[in-house]
Amino acid sequence: MDRFEIQQLAQKIRIHATRMISAAKSSHLGSNFSMTEIIAVLYGAVMNVSPESVESPDRDRFVLSKGHAAAGYYAVLAECGFFPVEWLDSFYTDGAKLAGHATRGIPGIEVSSGALGHGLPIAAGMALAAKRDDKSYKIYALLSDGECDEGSTWEAVMFAAQHKLDNLIAVIDYNKIQALGYTDDIISLEPFAAKLKAFNWACCEADGHNINELLETFGRIPFEKDKPSCVIAHTVKGKGVSFMEDQLLWHYHSPQGDEFENAMKELRTPT
Amino acid sequence: MRTAFVKALTEAASKDIRIMLLVGDLGFGVVTDFAKRFPKQFLNVGVAEQNMAGVAAGLALSGHVVFTYSIANFPIIRCLEQIRNDICYHEANVISVSVGSGFCYGALGMTHHGTEDIAMMRSLPGMNVVSPGDPVEAKAATEYLAQGIGPAFLRLGRAGEPVVHEQDINWQFGKAIKVRQGRDVAVIATGSMLKRAVDAAAILHQKGLETTVLSMHTIKPLDTEAVLEVIDTTPMVFTLEEHSIFGGLGGAVAEIVAEHGTGQSRFKRIGLPSVFTKHVGDQDYLLKQYRLTAETIAEDILCTYFNK
Image 1 (cartoon, rainbow over the protein chains, first blue to last red):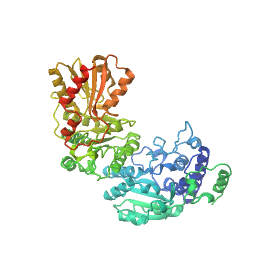
Image 2 (cartoon, rainbow over the protein chains, first blue to last red):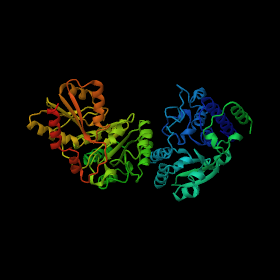
Image 3 (cartoon, rainbow over the protein chains, first blue to last red):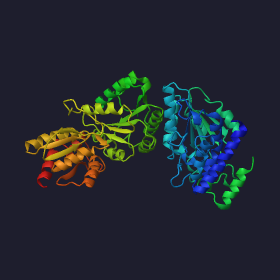
Image 4 (cartoon, rainbow over the protein chains, first blue to last red):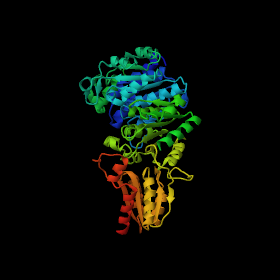
């Protein structure tokens, strides 16, 4: 996909996610919006995986460690043809195929997630397997900033550096809001990039909503030979709908009535 | 059991490159040979059991059969959620191996007592629980699990336990082994308690009671048929384990017995009470405090039998 198509994909993801979360009266719309461009770029242009190669041993792997942002993840998979777009309609409802957290068994999903701090260790295991088996595929793990509170995340950070897993890419959706407030007021991650560098990762920061910048950043992977790569993507929780941006409320709130209509109006307006 | 396990795993790894052994910075002198012979199939992940379980899941989802190895509670309870979500839910070929179960590390204290692990592992969907009774069973169990049958908990004792099975055995996953046949009492034993059950049966024989001893090396899936057979044919049935009587082998058998009904038979669990021990001492010393020696087991069985 070119830049324009990725942009359109991102817009579709936001519209699907808003519809799904509104209809299901579920949560985490803000967490979906902050990662939208990241997954649009990964699936649209970066990763070597498609509905045709979903069983191929050489495909790139994606692990959504922040499993609560499942709506957007399902949306990108559906838009890329991994399963019918109609499946999105019944998200989170009784008898549906798609649960509130990303679930293995749905075409294109490698790993079930939902409990935080699990994704990076699994992704590191996959990266180690690729190294041991002399395979050249890459593993992309998308983490929330909140789950960097988890010790298991840092266990995996140290492990990946120790074993020079330069086929592993951790993308951190750094929207700076976690479940009860600002990350800086709860457990500050700063100096974040310096920490990761001190842990022997090659780390780059990028505007997580700027498609060109993301494309350029992912184009340089691995940032350094023999080091795992981390992209700290600076994002805005609720990005794309003016009244949701940088608001903790939209970690939980499901848009209804006027909120839904106004959100859809903004999302449909070409940017 | 530890030695038999490592030997069997080494043999299996030499024939199957999918097999990997991850250790949580434990196994001094035990895993050295394996690490040297199969550097591509070995990794010390460090003191990080949650990561070890997650990495194992990632390797397994990429086609490997992975053994994670540490002692007592560390590879089991420390990373319980990783085992539940990352390994069991994904039906990953990961075998979580715990050495030093029960009171093996007795004098090291409460942190090193693996006395609730069967209960926790048994409750996880998709988890298989294997608890060999001697080195012969440990070897057979390792060979079986190394094929990659899905998530498993392999609960091992220490090194140097006595061999119970002097003759060749037909070890089958999920099938109890009848070690001794008797008409009066049945003892269903698992893990290190198998030897004590056999010894207790010999004492009971001298006192005039004939005992059936079943080695229940697979606790999940449990051999329901074998349990029902002893319930239906023996006046008194005991379970015997170096584990809390809550939720372990005793709990598993009790569930079957409660639904089936005991008929003319009576049933009793022998094991550890649900307490953190206040005693300090080695495995034998601690087992003595809880009346888990062959002599005290025989005494308690006699007492229960004649007060029935």
